[in-house]
Amino acid sequence: MSGSSVAAMVVGTVFIMVFGLATVSLVESVDESIKNAEFTLPDPQVVLTTVTDTEEITGPVEGLVIADDGLGYTEGDTCTVSGSAGTGLSFTISVDGTGQVTGISSITVLGSGYTDGETVNLDCNAESSTEVATVTIDIHSQNKITIKNTGSETVDLDHIFITLSNTADDTQGTPFKFTSEYSGTNLFLFPGEELSTDAFPLDSTEQGFAIGDDPNRAFLAIYDYNDAIPVTIT
Amino acid sequence: MSDGPSELILLSAGLIVAALVSGVLLGTWEDMSGILDERGKQGAEDVRTRISLTSDPINIAWETDDHVTIWVQNSGDTFLDVNSVGAAIAGITMTVSVADGSEEWLPGQTVQFTLTSATLDDSLESGDNDVQMSVTVSSTASGYTGADSLREDVRIVKP
Image (tube, rainbow over all chains, first blue to last red; front, side):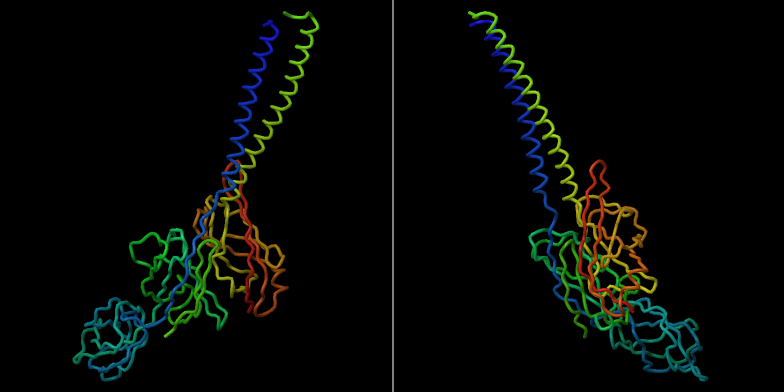
């Protein structure tokens, strides 16, 4: 074999190696592009099963009716009640000339955990009553939201938002996280799983509606998936 | 054995032509590889950039000072820039401002925006206005910035 033939073989082999390396690099780039094109974002599917607005077993106080007007009370006194499992209630009273309670001037703190229809004793700052007055409690309705994961992906509960609105007067509340009204320990909603919030009173800051309002539509948003159902108001 | 100088000349000429062609081919392949790499990275960032409307599209209130308030969720897989959001309603460009003080926009997080336009106020009628709203965002990734547009039919209620 001549020297020139050997040189041609060596050069040819080098060319083949260089082309091989270039081809590998090109194929890697194509693979990477395909991999990027195949990347998909989460596609969760969560539906609203029920949304209720009703008086639960216990709740915040909406109104107080004088059951026994007592005696020896002071006009404008700030009171709470005793003999109830509820806590936090605070209100001021109106009193007639004899010290009998004639009405509730205003409820300043609604409290929570009170039972509808329970009759309890007044517990006032000025403990001068000679006969204890009693009031019957009427509680506020509260909302409860139940959702279900109907998709095949596990969903971060913190990414689920609910918006309440009232189609009767075209008002929309503020979106709030499902987890803001959920006290359970779950962090995720697994496929097929169903979860409910605690019963919660509406709040102007949190949901955009006052406690006495009755929004009639609930809208759920989780990424590109939405669901809406009417609120069952009883 | 060599047939003489003519064979050497032919061999040399062949090698030179092969080298030139190889150079051109390798250069082209390198360019293709680079472009694919660039497009791949850009595409990856685009795919990871996504937003979704959190607000109920029905009954979005038109406020008296010429604005609507909407909540938008980062439903993608990358950080978004809260200060580079654009929006248009019914084809009219809106002035966008962050309403909840958010400075960063993480995946899954919802940010409240105010969209303002006196021009739109003039064109909206009292009551229901079914219009199209579009919102565009970009990611904060360095090097390759992803972008996404949200298009939603919404009902704006003007008092």
